Length: 173
Image (cartoon, one colour):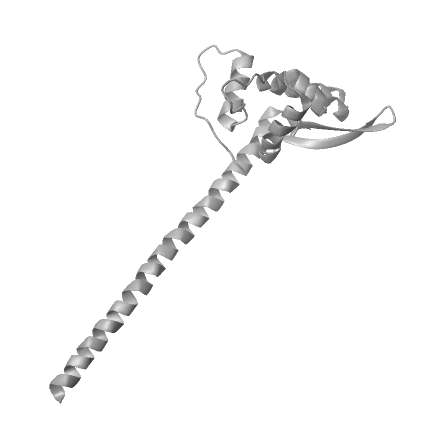
């Protein structure tokens, strides 16, 4: 899992499009290449709108978008969308869903919560767990350094005690 958080601050009177872009940047979900054309902020806005409609009409299938639809909103090809989708899923911002439409099973993705805020809470939980695990590893690292220093100093103490015992044996002879 590779999570790249970006420290982008919103400007005053920012539009919803600009705020969506800032949210995506702070979560590390914007394209990483400088010349990338993907407009994920439009996709995020559409996912939010669909989730709102699905909740209002009590039709959960309205919130689901296929990868092809997601790619159209982002302005990229389906395969490129699949490449980017992994990061959204890693953060638990989206979840994979299947439903039946016209007698066929359709697989797509939707926000992983009742709205963007609850989906963000799940992403926050993933990042928090990653940081907690890292903190445990840091503690383990510090303890290992201490143990290694102690092990390194023990042979020196033993060798010094042997030298003093050897010299005391010589003196007593």
